[in-house]
Amino acid sequence: MAEALAKISQVQDWGMIQIRADLSRAGDAIAGAAGLAVPAQGCTTTDGSRVLGWMSPDELLLVLPKAETAAALAALQDALSTEHALALDVSDMRAVFRIQGAKALQVLTKLCPADLSAMPENGLRRTRAAQVACGIWREPGGYVLVGFRSVGDYLRGILTGAASPGTDLEPR
Image (cartoon, rainbow, N blue to C red; front, top):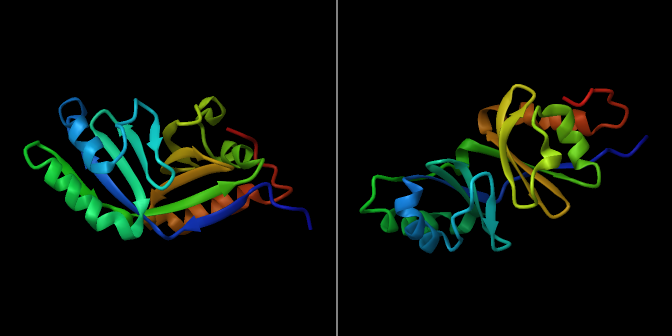
C-alpha cells in the first residue's frame, strides 16, 4: 500500500479564544493580555506555544494550550473591560486538524480554492475546504486547519481522502 501524501491528525489539547474589538483602540491591551503582538492583516504571531491570528478587521483568534484558556480569557476580559469588546472561549466550538508532511500543501490544494502556496510563513487564510468554512495557517512541517466542530467528522473525512495515495482529485 502506498504511503499517504500527508499525516492528518486531530488536535484535542488546544484552547481557542475569539476576540472581537476595535483593534486600533484595543490592540495594546490585547497584546499585553495575550502575551503576543497583534498580527498584521492575514497573519499570525506566535511564541511557539500560543498563536494569535488575524481573522478580520475586528477579530482575532488566540490559540493556546487548553490548560491556559481560563486564565487567558480572564486576563483578556479584564484588559478589555473599558472597551466595546468580546473575548469568548470557543474551544468547544472548533475542530482542529494538523496536516503534516512534504505534500501537505498538495492535500490542501485539492480541497481549497485559495492559493495557499502564496501564503507567507506567518500567514493565516480564511477559505473553505470543499464546502466548509475554515481558517488555515502554517506551522513547522505543515499546516493547521480550524473549522466548526459540527462538521469535524466531515473535515476529517475529506482531509483523509485528499491525503490518500491514488486520489485523482484535481487541485482547485
